[in-house]
Length: 269
Image (cartoon, rainbow, N blue to C red; front, top):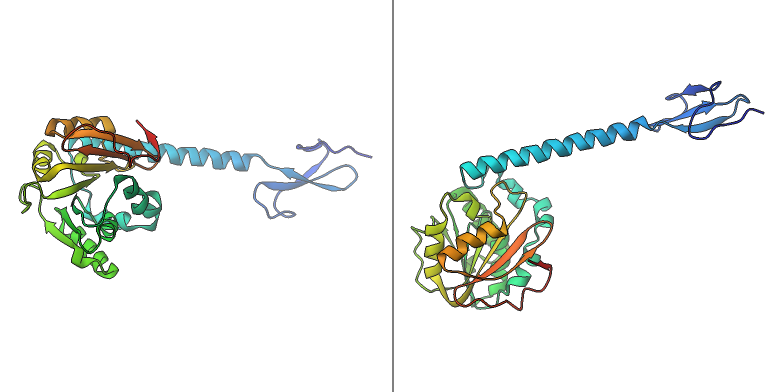
């Protein structure tokens, strides 16, 4: 009786790769006695692995190129890519409820959101401030504001939100009027963020807080250290940072330098 050598063909065996087995990467070997045994062609998974590695390398190179381009010429998120901000994939990547949980948004708060985009986080803010609270959502792209306004209208929360199509320099913002300021992936889109942050410092109430979050996969995302440098220069004091795989979150104070007890989940830097 002929012997079957596992994982490779007997020298006298014949190979039928496609006619006997439809599964990619699998073939059958015929031994001396005519019996058939499965034979795995390892070239298929190896080829797939190489393709995935090439794809990952291409994606990483493209992201690095975009980051360098954004660093040299900061700019707002292109309105042509607004669908990504609204996508289900991004909502799973950056869930608004989980994002806001550590910040401590309370009913009755007056919140200023700079760079509201399509209103994904704005909607959750409006839900949390309640009927007695307000959200002022600011963006410099009308197309994004229109999407955000439609979202809030559909959610039945439009009466809690005031949208402003302007930057912070031209916004009608009262001094010391905000209990909370939220910046979402904004600082890296501005060539010089210091004037904006100085304005926000004046809008913040005494003992109020500023929350900033950045997504590493966004081309203009800043590191926590870079954001802290800009915020400290404007007068804000750090409360703490949380780093997650999908984003990092920082909370800063207008006055004092105390740790925020609400900032418990995640890894504190």
